Image (cartoon, rainbow over all chains, first blue to last red; front, top):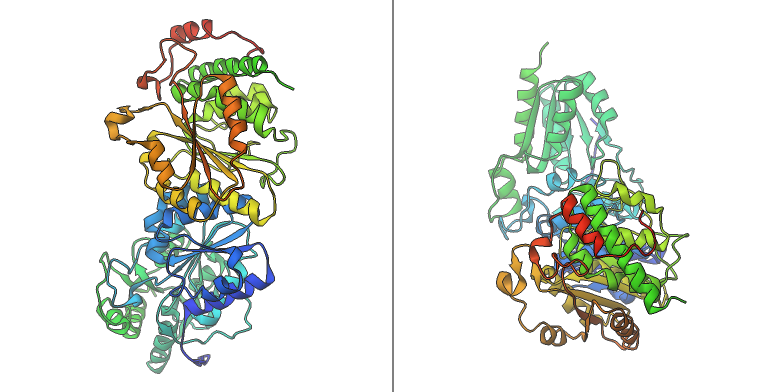
Length: 319
Length: 281
C-alpha cells in the first residue's frame, strides 16, 4: 500500500491557529471572534498581531455567532472560535437563522470535537455536531484529518463564499498530509487504492484507517482508503467509483452514527448503489472522561475496530 | 424636504397597507406593526434616507436598519415599498407562495432592503453590533439602527449583546425598543416583567433615551436628538413607548392583536379609520 509517514504528531487546532495568522496577513477582511477560549483555539497569535480585527466576546457564544453574521454585512470574513459543542449545539438557532438561512459568509471553527477531547467528559465531547451542521441548507461541513490538512482547509475556506463549519480536535495526532497539498473543498482524497473494501474515514480516524489498511493487507485484504474531509458537499463521484469496484463499505468517524459522515455515505449509496455498509462510530451514547486512546477503545473507534468492520463488510458482500 | 404632515400621511398609508396585507394573507402580526409605523416611517424618510434604487448588501456609505422583531414584517415591507425599494404591487404577495415577502424577513428571496433574516427573537441586536463593528473597521461613519420588541428582551442573548456593545464602545449604533408592554400571552409585566428597564439599560452602560412613539414630531425630534450621543464611546438605546394597534380603535392597546388577522368586516372598519393618503397598493 501507499506508505504514509507521521511527520511528527501535532494538534489539528494548531494548524487552524497558524493558518488564521497567515490569513490575517493575507486578507484585511478576515476578522476573528472568540468566546473566552483564545489559547485553546490557538487564536492568540492572530489576536496579538491584529487586535483591531479580533473580538473577545466573553462566554457568550450566541452573541458571538450573530455578531459574526452582522460583520459579514460590512464585507468581513469572520472566523468564530470555540469548542465544537459550544460552536453548534449551544447556538443552533443562531446559526440556523442568522448564518445558514441568511447565507452569511461566517466560518464557524470548532475545536475539541469528538471523543478524543478526553478527560473533560461528555459535556464537552460533542458527537452530534456534524449532523447538526450538515442538515442546514447552505452549510459546508469540513473535518480535516491532521495538522497540515487543517491548516490548508482553514486557508481555503476564507476564499469560499458562504457558511462553513470547520471541525478539528484537541490531541496531538499523527501529521502525514504533505504540507504543500492544496485543499479542495468537496473533493475526497483517495489515500490508498484497493479492490476489496472501501474505507471512508474523516478527521482523526483517517490515520486509524490507514493503520487498519496495513493490517488488512497483511491478511490479504486490499482496502481502498478515502479521506472524506468534506462531509458536505459529499464527493459522491469518488465514493461511487470506489464502491462500484469494491462493493462493500466501512465508514469511520469520531461522531455519533446517527447524523455522521457514515450516514451521509449510506444514504447516498442507498439511493444509487446499495451495498453492505459497516459503520465505525459511536452508537447512540454520550462519551465519558478518560484518555483519548482509552476512549477510542471503549467506544470501538480504534484500529482493530476498523479491521473488524472491514471483515464484516466483506463477509456481507454478495458475490 | 418632507414635513411632519407628509410623514404622518405616509405613516397612515403604511397602516392601511399593514391592515390590507395581513387581511390579504389571512395571517400576520398587525398590533406591533401599527404601533411602530410612525417610528419606521420617520427613520427611513427623515433620518436614514438610504438610496432605495441602488441597494447594496453591504450598505457601505449609508445608514442601515436591522429588524430584530421580524414579525413586524408587514410594517417593514410597506415602508420599504413606499420608500421605493420595490414596486408597491408586490405588497399583495405578502406571505403567499413564491413571494419575496416571506412571513418573516428573509435574505434568501433577494428583497431589496433586507440584509438579515429575522423572526426567531433575540438575535438582531447582536447582528446590529456586528454590522456596526464592520462600519468602524471600514472607516464608514454611518450608523446602524436596530428595532427590538420589549417582550423580546426576555431572550437572554440580548443581555449578552447589551454587555458587549458597552464594553466594546459600539457608539455607532442606536437601538430602539418597542416598549408597548404587550406580548402574545398578555402584558409583559405579567408574562415576565422587565422591571426598571431604563435603570437596567443605564446599568449596562447604554445612553438611554425615552420617547412616545406614536407622535411624529416627538419621534423625529428624539431620533435627531439621539444623533448627538453618537461617537462618544457609548451605545445609544431609545425606549420607545408605543401603543399596540395604534390607529385602529378596536386594536388599540390590546395584546390579542399581536398575531391575529382582521376579518373582512374588521378590515373595513379599520380602513375607515385610516385615510387613504397616498393611494392603496
